[in-house]
Image (cartoon, rainbow, N blue to C red):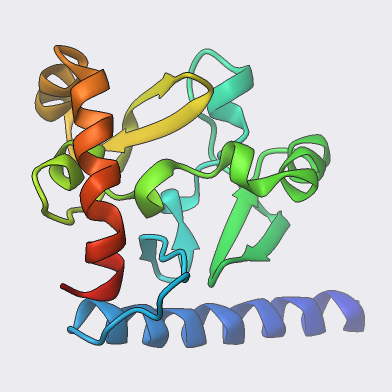
Length: 160
């Protein structure tokens, strides 16, 4: 019981620190070169959805606090211990591109929140979109969109 409370307290403290850090980046501080910045809400990546579930289920599933991992400045939640283990063995394979921000917006040089309910997997990579409308625009020419987003992503990370 004590171990559970300690784990819960540490997770809560980590979420608070992550939220403060993420607000600092959003407020205009420059991200350090080489830093992968993930969109977080209350310190939780992709609104609490299990990133592995996008690849193995028909629809994405919500993660649980009992299966949580801290990676790249965000807490990632998983539906099961199996999905948590998959992520821990290769997080870059499952994390959404462009820090979980809207891939369409990124292609346009703008950073906006990605919605885990508007998504697509292209060549084994997960992309999130702000909403269904921009997802449809993305699908019309996703190869060019990916190329454009990749071109601006480093500048956005540097705050340029």
